[in-house]
Length: 185
Length: 135
Image (cartoon, rainbow over all chains, first blue to last red; front, side, top):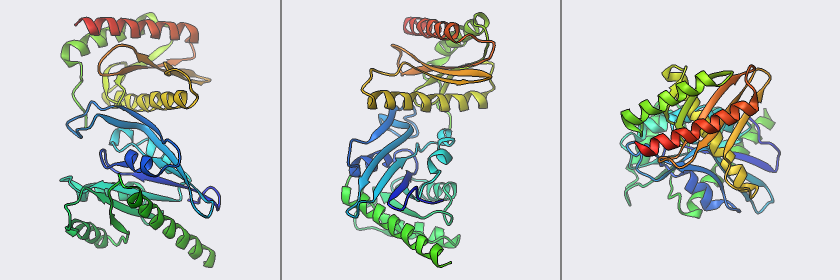
């Protein structure tokens, strides 16, 4: 999977329902993000008013004039058909997780596997963690390590622009490192 | 995970009967699903559960993209989407005035006549809204 052009990257935000994908894209997009929010009727799965039915879209211009196009996936399994469509031509993936969720580890593995960790640059952002307690991040990292996967994992409040930009920066560093490796090969 | 139909048994039964009537009276209709706008099937015609669930999810995504494009183009709300192919059409049409928000996805073969299909779908949506708000 390659970026569309050397100065234009498409990156994808994914993760379970309620992890903050729409919020993250809105937090950093240079213009009003395009969302496909609809009224959520599945309050048992996630108690929030709206949910993404197709995609989110935003974009940011970096200081070096690179354009980063930001796409968000719907989180629910029933919208899985959208995932490969949105992943097509993506230079990298940001997996967002809800640190409070009882199935946090399962969510990590599910989205990391579904979006091809190891085949595509990827970083993980975890929100709603207890303050001063990063033990859940260690647990997540260990679970990936057991499976031979090494990914940067960050504590991230997706409402904070700086936190989301840190995730994007980390991903772009990975994309760049991958490009250098492929040039050397 | 499948949420319970938001219409309950009575509402679902009314919707199913309405879809059957629509299928019988409209040329070329091969299947249909009444769906919530967040992608759950409420009632379906000529589809097994798996296919109905899939069409409901895809129909809701299509409707949501239609709304986003209409908004971006400074148009009023998108009321329907049409996918045309050589062998048939898929339409997704908003059912106005129901709660939760719903749409009707219809699949028709090449025996269908688009204008007729759209008119009949619109009538079906109107009738669904009328009956569901009365129950």
